[in-house]
Length: 361
Image (tube, rainbow, N blue to C red; front, side, top):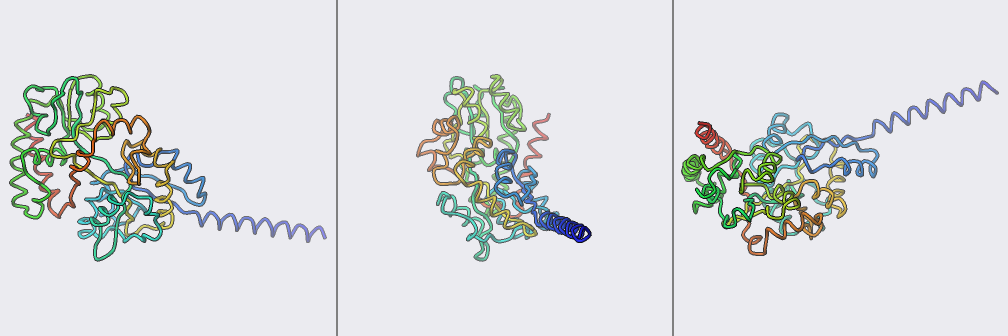
């Protein structure tokens, strides 16, 4: 009898061990390729508590790196990526790195209808939708309005009265903004690359001439923040989220939508072609669109969630900064980044290298 009990005990232990191994084998890892502030530790913790069979593994990146990583693997290595809306269409046509979304698995009813329809239009290929919106924001100008009260144009960063007191980042945003300030429409010129090259050449001349006006070229949000808070500069080209954060510390520092329109981006949810955890990816998408989580991520990113009433769900300080920056006219004047055709980023990269070489002297 004791032997039988021992056998039963052993059998039960073996069964439990098998069950444990089976449960472990069923656990999924959601490999998220995203921006630095879109997956706060607390949000990950809350998601894993709700879905204990899913582990979240985060790689922080940016648009160029996301595409490079997915291109190198043919869309492998990650289960959910967050490229901006203008970086999906051409990348998919060139590299085949994404898979179509199953919209029935996403609660799109909570999304802002204009942002949703815009992203769907930008990322639909042969009737299949590849992305939906998550966060949006703009690039434009930032100024201490007590020291640069008249700043309203990208070109004002090169106004001699602010000599040595302005900054910018030598990336494609300043190329586009300067083009708009010159009266050009760079996005319209995407359909005529010879025309676009002509615009870039003219922009390069302007920005090289501007180099003596620039205190320094900022690299990231932290060094730009330090420059503004210390008073070393009075104005800069910026991401709106950086200006919103500084507004909470000094309400004289404000985001200024340029008179030609702030450049607007929408970061998306997009599933890589070789993703292995689609169900987990859809669960994450729906989870982070909940109002409580929206507020937490907006607090981290400074950006606006692409949900209905997204501004109202921002933390109080950031909502106040948005309301101080934008009126209805400025919102209506937004210039959303257009899909980047093949070859354009190479053209822009060469132009930036030319400017960097000249400004380093």
